[in-house]
Length: 192
Image (cartoon, rainbow, N blue to C red):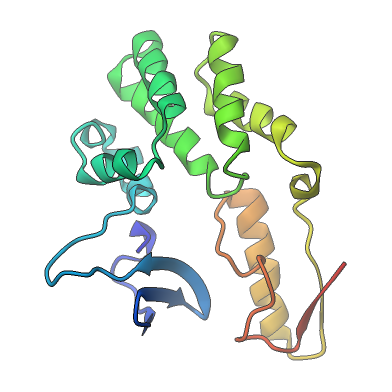
């Protein structure tokens, strides 16, 4: 579950092989259900906000080991991190890497490694440059982040979508409400 939701009330739905976590009706996490009692399935993305304040903890994080094992943390990420630490030091280089990892929330997965490669080739380890280069490499259909929706319901439901749109584009927080029509708001329709 995302660290920002620590201490907050969430709704959990269990399936035979999955677990969904929702906050205010918005899907915030989906995990494969653990097969063994007492086991942990750690997702590096959920710790990124905490790691921005304690970047030194990333190198020994169990979630990083898990991300490497599952292929989420790639050779491109490691190359960026090595270069960033060499240029800016451990703390600032790790913060730059965390900034790049946060890009995966709002950019297509295939675009971020291309952005990393372009930034490292230019000799720069700046997450903002990685974001610009990743957007240049994103498929055209995914570049436009505008969602058209109509609402025949109440103002509060429209506010949820407006808030989600602002969160996505201004805070770079992807809350999943804009991915597809939500069963929580059946009166909302996504238009082409």
